[in-house]
Image (cartoon, rainbow, N blue to C red; front, side):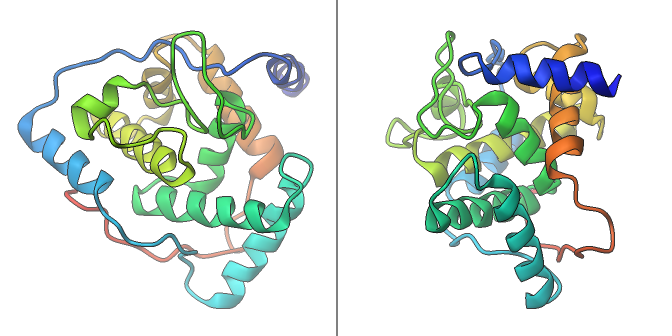
Length: 208
């Protein structure tokens, strides 16, 4: 199984952005309001750990793993800090989100899929109408991560915490195993961070 995941990830790396056709669905007023509040939160990204030493260790380790994908030290650490903050505030595992980004865009900021999904987390433009505005640039790193993590949190809530099904919804392939398996495979093979290596500090998630 592990060998199959590695082969699939290798094949995936040679392809353009992999977003599926996310389905635009009508949101209840309360859900839309909560998601809009999250999108419009202007808090600057930061590492959210119980103490600074743990954050420094995490950043150093993940930066080393990501160096081949993003050679520039400043941009790599900036991206990692933003991923960690946006994932944590949305109640998501930052390493899982990095696995998703690896599968979706290969960490390419300006990736665009055949169905029009954009950026690092391959966000579909219809989300600008649903929870944002046309002024939100989905190729902007911070905006894309904010939208992507907010959307995945929404799907996780719909699926009552079932990550496998939430990932299927995110990719527009609910019920099919390929995409969730790829994300989980990328997470565990490239970005896994064992319990005890770092303790995440709880941050508030607007509207939840």
